[in-house]
Amino acid sequence: MMDGNTGKRWADVLAPIWNRLPPRLRESLRRRLRNTAAPEALPEELRQRLNAVGFSTSTPDTSPAIYECFAALADTGVQGDYYEFGLWQGYSFCVAQAAAVSAGATQPQFFGFDSFAGLPPLSGPDAQSDEFKAGDYAGSYDEVVSNLNRFGVDWERTHLIKGWYDDLPESAAHLATKMGPAALVLVDCDLYESTVPVLRFVRDRLQPGTIVMFDDWNCFDQSDDMGQRRAFGEFLDQNPAWKAAPLLSFGWHGQAFTMQPATSQEEDRLRSLT
Ligand SMILES: C[S@@+](CC[C@H](N)C(=O)[O-])C[C@H]1O[C@@H](n2cnc3c(N)ncnc32)[C@H](O)[C@@H]1O
Image 1 (cartoon, helix red, strand yellow):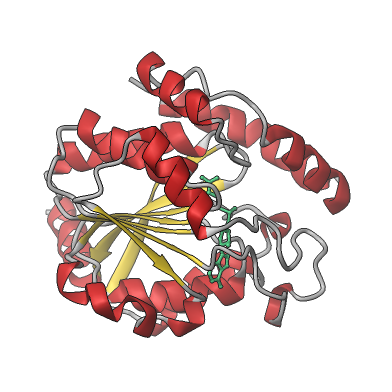
Image 2 (cartoon, rainbow, N blue to C red):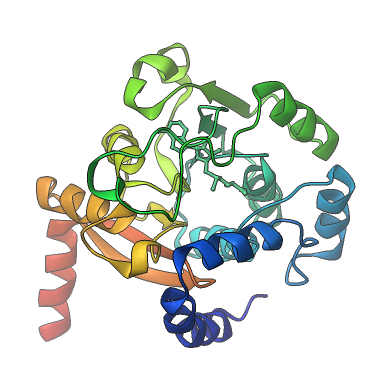
């Protein structure tokens, strides 16, 4: 069982220090961290499987958080599919499948979306930042398929969608009938301009209790005017039917929310007053 409070305390301590480092130093450190072995917080059998593939990830703390989120879904009884936006080598996507099985969720379909060409050119509010650049995390579709094969995903339940998020939902149209309500969504695509179309696509798949994880919540010096914070803020403003309750923070970078219809939150609040 993960100790979410310990993870949160570390994140609280490290985030201000990390955010004060110059962006170039942060990027250099981030690149080094990509080659770390699978985190010790994960089950040993899974660590061995991940290490055998030879995977890298820039954010090792995301994987234990995925475990925590699937455990939270088992507690609340929310069922549905897994959607991941931003695969890079497929690391967190594979972890999600193992985490679902570990939580007893054998029914989800797993949908992974990526350009497989890395980040798009930076534009909009993030354009002046040197935290990310076009082509970061470039890989290839075949490489990810090979990684997923070596890991041993269940292809009956696994679907990869290649394309830029601006082209959603057209690029996913062939799978539309398979895509059910979302139980867990991992938004790991770094940028404002990438997160906006992702949230627009996810909106119609939200259900009460869907968990949305933002892997890059604290990027851009935690600015509310850039990146995922800005995109999600705008999304909530434009979709007043939905409210987001903070669920857990992970690493120096990530934040997960539980989505609830605004009315039910208001009903809960009123009930708690009586
Ligand atoms: C940080 S990496 C994902 C890391 C991964 N989840 C892991 O386990 O290590 C970000 C990914 O988002 C993808 N991406 C970002 N913006 C995109 C866009 N607009 N359209 C398609 N893919 C995008 C990139 O290609 C890249 O693979």
